[in-house]
Length: 380
Ligand code: DAV
View 1 (cartoon, helix red, strand yellow):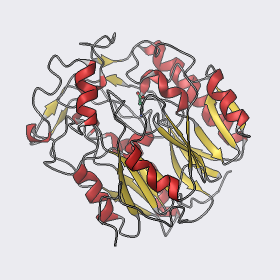
View 2 (view 1 turned 60 degrees about the vertical axis):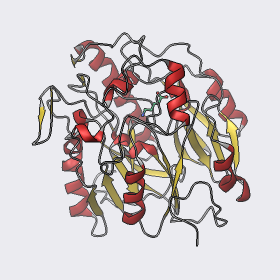
View 3 (view 1 turned 180 degrees about the vertical axis):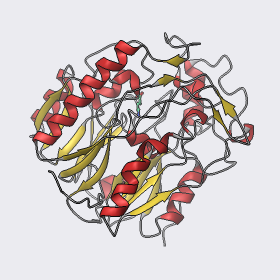
View 4 (view 1 turned 135 degrees about the vertical axis):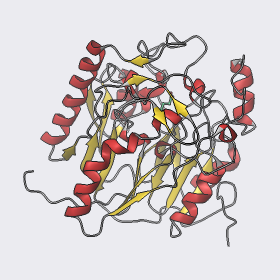
């Protein structure tokens, strides 16, 4: 694809993929704990209390799998770009806070929200991720130069002072208490300022479905609604999730009219209506093939459903996830197995590890009947 000039445009997660960013594991750190990230480390995790650069051999193994994914996509005619990793072990110091290290750039999906001809760097709610957008700066500059219609955008940088987090939120918290708080929409982030991670947003044409959870607050969604006035922003939440961070191992669209929902994290009844009245089917995702995530991984076993849809008939699934592969095969999709478990500890699965630059198609209205229950603005 030499000499191919960039065109940025993507409106959803299932139209034919033409150009994508695939992350890199280089220099990734386990960040020190901070008010928002304690949430990421479950009580019984082998990561508790550890921070600093990840062991080199694990970085190399993760990069092999990321490179393999990039090659596989290129062989299918998809243009692939890669970020430029920073030395993530540097401290983050702003006028408002400091923390011992940054994180990494394996999961571009967390940071970059592509909506039409725009790529928006998210606010981000972890202090360690404050500078992460810099890994994509060179790519954004190039897209800006190559595509006269590309909108290069950045959400308001949050201050992330102590006021942005509920103090002591994670002190001696049990799983039961976590689930209770998730159900009550009581999260570690306050409403002090707009906060969101890009991976909390599921894009379906004119409608953007945002997970209200540990990393995205109501003000973040209100900001997104004002920023995208021609879109309809919805708030969704998943009471069964003790660590609600990012929507893409919970609620995953496969093609127009079909979404997989994590059976342990069901969309509440009142929020299902918008899908039902518009003829969408929500199916339970197949169970993961593993009972534990790989070592030093802070995502759950449900990365099994964090698949990368290449077009409505083709999907990349982690190679050991036999149940998930079988389910998608039965749904009539061509399933491409991709070994990826060595990359999981660096920030997620196949969807997390990618960010859209271009997919075919335009901004479709796939929810023409709007109902109350999810919209953050009243329906008029
Ligand atoms: O189930 O641990 C992972 C999402 C990472 N972006 C989970 C969510």
